[in-house]
Length: 420
Image 1 (cartoon, rainbow, N blue to C red):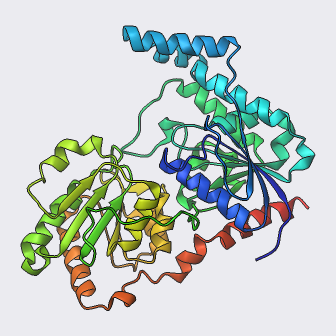
Image 2: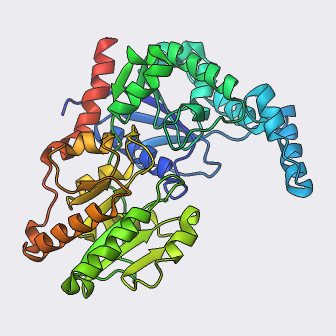
Image 3: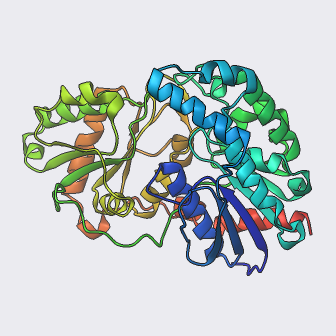
């Protein structure tokens, strides 16, 4: 690994890994930068004083003595007490909420206090539907030549592929915002090759600036005990994370039921775990409650979720079924690769997950093909049954290298060397 004493400024919404998968991915990203020897300063908007070992973490405090803060408070109070949602009307005029503007201004003020000469690169990390760090840096042209804008998902929402497509509030203004990001940033970082391609259709300038930087694996999460609901030593199929709308587990549930019905031996030692929020599919999952081998749990800690992935016989990745294309790289894929257990990928035929695993990878299916899923589970079970525990591995050294901090360092060095 090339040693570096370069100074990096990271701007992000949150460094609390418990609040979302996006924050988990961003914290892992920051820790990988630190492991590679960079001097990292993090400006964050968590609104809680948090630290990441090895980095200087600066909390951007919310601005309160201003009109935006007052208007945002009024809007929230009216909506809560009177049930009147002004956001559609307001955001179709301004593009964003008053609170969004105030948050971005709060971040912007913190960044403005920093001398651009003190840092070699500024990285903006997003999460969920929030691109506040990008909006803040966009207001500071002095940073443009050092700006790596990292884009974890399509944005704005009108650019999501099927089945997620809908027109968000303030779509026109959000589109103009991202057009400015594409023209102003020096480099656009994407976790996925297909995502970079997809976004370049809408913002061609991303095409000439794109750099693929996959999600990172957090090696410094404290060890946690396995939850009491886990059956150690059994054939354990584990899905951790939010079952978002559009990512239905119906095909998996039907496939698991078929698998149990077809293999009497497997019924005694096979379990399917759906661990994480699943409110979009509460009724669906409830209709399979008669399957005693199905275990659901709404929430575990970040450390417990990693412990479950480590102890799994097979880790599951579920993507949308009602589509033939998925540009997303699920943040947990890095963890699934690094714990070195077989992955059952339920993904569209054209997807980043399949691109990485390769067409020859055996354990994959489209998410709604319950019969193929059942057959694949049977094959996995028989292979698990006849494989020594220490040999039951994913065994993809190539992907471990791809998701490693060394690969991240190589990509960052490419940017820094180009400006040297």
